Length: 373
Ligand SMILES: [Zn+2]
Ligand SMILES: [Zn+2]
Image (tube, rainbow, N blue to C red; front, side, top):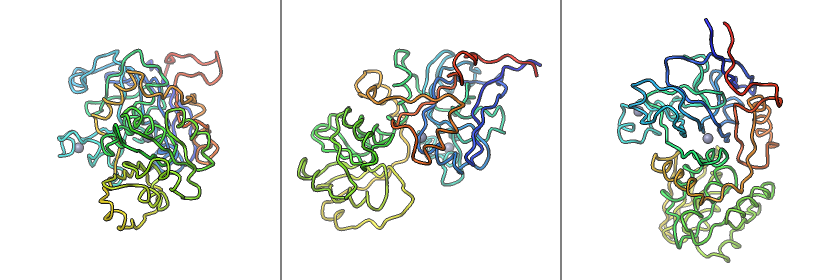
């Protein structure tokens, strides 16, 4: 029987990723992957966070390649549609799924043993359940959002990080005209939060980061933020310049960054906690009571935030094209994730796997391989 083979970067969860060929599944719905953006979660999964080997990649963009009739009705897209795929494959039946909060469905909740696109075992079914492969299998409970064709590959790959940023900075934090916003951490999501704050019309945007992140601070400056070094934990420079802050989005979530955030917020300020450094902290109640602060935790993003992010990207109003894109071939996934874990990864936070990029120029075909099995 002749199978069409698909290249896939399979990670063993112990720091190794090997490109393998998997059979393209027939009689299922599937996506031809255009890009798969890398984030810190991939670094964690790659370094030891997977229970079984899997194809990583959970910020997936692509074009619907084949659809069953049932999935076409459920997904609401057609063959040929360019879409962003969320990583959440909810059960479709629980209270959270019925309320369109499928990101909180127990079946996708990592704290209760759930799993998502980009971590489903490669040994299950077709195995094509992550973005770091030529194709992704789709089912009725995948969540896909149509993308305009004119959006560049680089900007389209920002869809889910920017959607998270819209949820955290605007929908949860209340960034908007007249608001003074601080983003802690100029990483992938921090840079996206700056773009969201700019799009919301915030009065001022400050990004805090360490000296070691100087180049990413400059990328945030190009988007419209004022960078401030946070190595000494001194917030007076920010307060002297903008006064009490309305919104702080903390993408780090360490005891130090939480203390920094609370020290900057003014009356009725909102602290959005979007990062987890892994160390719990006792939040000092004084600033919260005195300034009547709100502290909000966030997880992922709402479907509304995805649609808003796509609108902003399509309108060309994010400025994110100024952030360099570092493209990876499948062969480079493993070495890049190892480098990121060691702190020697690419300077830009926008690291995007293009599964069709040849390992060596002119030696690998850019179409599925036909082979006999
Ligand atoms: Zn991610
Ligand atoms: Zn559910």
